[in-house]
Length: 197
Image 1 (cartoon, rainbow, N blue to C red):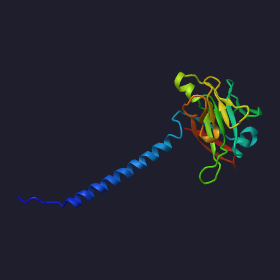
Image 2 (image 1 turned 90 degrees about the vertical axis):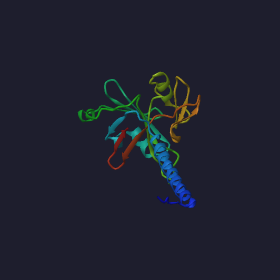
Image 3 (image 1 turned 135 degrees about the vertical axis):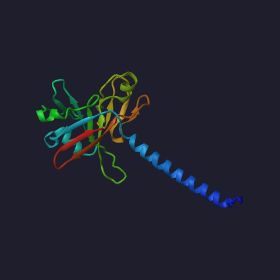
Image 4 (image 1 turned 180 degrees about the vertical axis):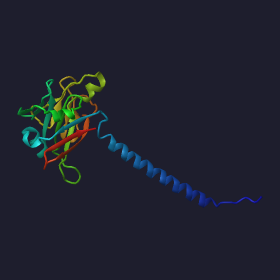
């Protein structure tokens, strides 16, 4: 039986092509993984249809560098607070109770003061909890706005500060995880806000 011989160069070229395909596939996988890490995998849900009539939230979603803290009282009311102390309380209706909010400690919602690569300002939603205290010690400690810089929130327990304009990364204190970020959509024409994960 006669054996077929393949020239070395054809096998070498085939190996090069396969190697290039493998490298390209790995690059695509890395990009997808990086995008998934932008958002936390913690369950969250909030639907609010009255953004236009809620001054602290409306201002935060319409102006770069503005943020609003959203907390939930035990009696079910929603509290919207700006960094300067202005607040608005909303009593949910039966329809609002249909989609009950889910979160760890509340939300921080607003518009980043730093534009993206296209020059557009984008809205973000973070959980109000300090992610490092919550993950390390199971303590749902709420962050609060810095009194001098309203794009910074601080944890009073671990003394970390987080920059809301820069993806919620730690900017002061011990290094650690950034704030938990959620997927968010906002339709200015209808005044409807959705936060979910």
